[in-house]
Image 1 (tube, rainbow, N blue to C red):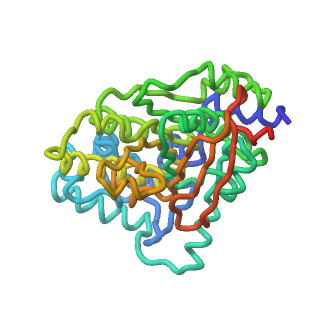
Image 2: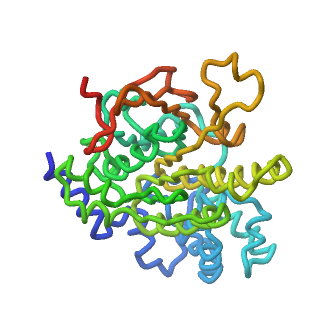
Length: 363
């Protein structure tokens, strides 16, 4: 089992580039190539912002876009005209030209349902480490979308995050995605030693696994948002399969307190979640975020079976594609419930937390 996994992980350690990155690294032809309008970029063309040069955009302007945090053609399409104008050195005329050329490279118009189904064949799923939990999620954590796990302390959110750091690097036939992992840690809970223990379960070299994980400690909500621009630059250079934010809301609760700052907090949180979704779609990565809960402070709580509610309100609820509610079970067992999903039916699965990470319950 481990030989295939070992080859997969080592290929990531040596800086294996995605097909897109290889194309970016190649020399751009001197001749302007003819580009068919409305070409729908597939997974292999995901990072080719340099292709704008072939349509008459100056290489210096492409460089300015990358310095402004825009690393893909699809990122140009997803950006507002206002945000592009804010990039230093880009005039109104240049922005219009860039948007026009990007529209020729990336089809953002209507497509048929059959074409949408074909595009979804690029979606992959990452195993959670527990076959029972994977069955509930129909294969694992889905790429190109945001999966939110919320629950009180000791419900297994961070343990699932550490297990996913390893399983994301496994080959596809073992439930992985053969890619690197980016981890934004806002609560100082990332533990390399824990990752090493889980790697041993799959008979993998812990050093290889850890080399394929990049970790950033976020100290403020603004810093946490800035880190998303940094990780986008890294994803444009190498193949990543998973982005983890543990937790997504903790720093927003600290920086914005009370009802007086609630509106501003929700606006900033909404921008953060929107950027997460754009990264998920641009690079076809699975985004896994953890969320805290709060007790309902009103009198109606006594009439509710479980008065705990996830932080973030409707902003998090609308931005997250799949929402998982984690709660404690007997001993080391935890219960995962599908709280909301556009595809998965309601249901529950029991998993256990052990030395080897997340596993099926022993009894």
